[in-house]
Length: 227
Image (cartoon, rainbow, N blue to C red; front, side):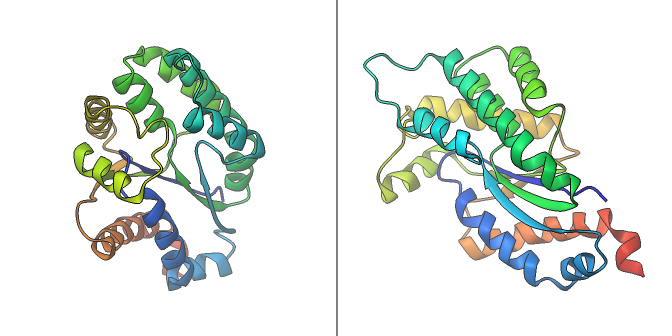
């Protein structure tokens, strides 16, 4: 049985990097998930991220988030670098894991490109959709957890931890456009995008995330869990 791709999305500071390992740990201890592994309906659980989920991707991540050249990175160059990272990531990591029946928890995927480079940078949405389909070979998440948070609150969180990367250094209006992009995507793809209130405390957010994921787990594997 093919695995499932679960993606965490949201603006800077929304808590993705905090919540993803919490969900990983909770699933590995969850009796239903363990039972699916015992039945070989699920082979395991893999966590990864974009950009940077491969050796090639780590170099691209450094360019995308740490670039400090005299000339600003062109928006189209940025878009193509993200597409290159994704193409390698899908080919090397995600698709093989899914083919083995593994669950993949990924920090950012196709929706980030639409939100950041489409709504944030103002690039053509049809072009981005085409590039996403080329980079992924048509792969879309089974479930996207959108950690919904006001952009200004998220940026304040990033400033508290210090060391802002190139994307985090963009002005508030850019991040507000990104937030609007995620909201538009959630309205367009209700079948796979679930909004999570990321303004709550870490434990409350984690409980809401797991409740959503547990519901989908029961739905996807009902025959296995009934036996």
